[in-house]
Structure formats: structure tokens, C-alpha cells
Image 1: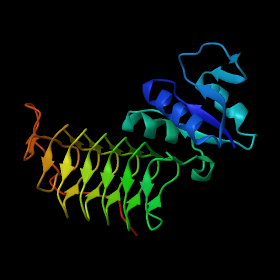
Image 2: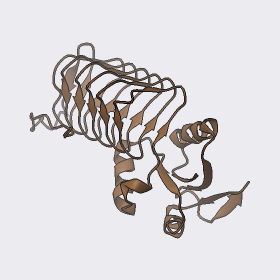
Image 3: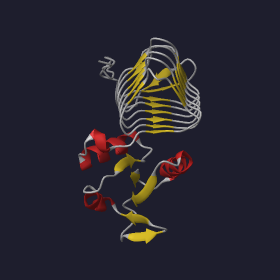
Image 4: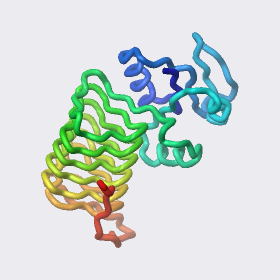
Length: 222
């Protein structure tokens, strides 16, 4: 299967390496706005994002290989491509239950674990060594960082970033576009658009603002 990768930063380099190890895909183009002119190197096209439209006529799959949740969603909305055109990538060393649901465009990295009855949305990053236990819901465009753990029946919303080695205890909810700091332990629900750090976590508030929305929003499993 031929693949087009959007983005060519550090996260993209990891995905390119994963594709090489899987050995079922061929990267035919890498698109990034740092390329002013199209060039071809060892059979791979390097061009800016506008070249994307020239590739639509081919039977290829696309991967948005951008680490930022916000930018990943922005590109997804900008190019307005059907989810069926995106490639889901699961590293051979990852353990993914046959009863888990993995969305289009999501990347599951080496030695990650996704257990039974879990739903992972579209365009997520489940990073190296992350553990997502049974019955979790991970919203679209979220990122679970290396060695982070979502214990049973956790629900995290769209665009959430769970920092490296953070832990979320069972039954907790993390609202849309919130950030959990590295090494944190989440023992309470976290409102949308929040930043939480520490073990146990505490909410960080901007000194000019108060958190206005205390309602936790999350990806609907149904």
C-alpha cells in the first residue's frame, strides 16, 4: 500500500521508521511546508502541503504525522479528506485487543497496550509503552505520551494530552483539550481546557482568568 505522510518533524520521523518496520507500506510522498520546491529523493516526493491535491487521484492512504494535537486537527479540517483515506498504523510490538476499536489515522507506537472494550478515536497518538486499560474512551486528536497509563473506564475528551508517565485512576473524566503534566496522578475529574500537574494533580489557572467551564466534556462512546 502506498502512503503519503503529512509533516516531516520528529514525530514524522518516528512514524516513517514504524512504516519501515511494518514492511507493508511504501511512502511515496512526504509533504511539509518547509519544502518550497518539489524534489524527488530515492523515489520519494518531498513537497509542500499544496501538492496534496495532486495526490488525491491516486489510490493512496494519508497520515497526518504532526505531534501537536491542535495542528493535527487544523490540517485535518483544512484538507477535508474522508476518514477512509487515512491509514491507521499499529507497531508490530504493540498489544491491541481484538475487542478494542481504533479510529482512522491513529498511530499506536512500540510496546503500547490497548486492552479490551476500549475505544480510541481518530488521529490519536498512543505513544511508546503507553497502557490503555479496559473500557477506556480516548477522544479524537488526543495524545497519550510514553509510559502513561489510563486505568479502567477512564474517558478523555478530544485533543487531550496525557504527559509522559502520568496515571489516571479508574472512572475519571478528562475534558476536551486539557493537558495532564508528565508524571502526574489524576485522582479527580478534570474540566475541559484545563492544565493539571502533580501527584495528586492540581489545576493550574491563568493568573488573568478563572476556569469558567467546570463541566467535563468527553468523546461519546456510542
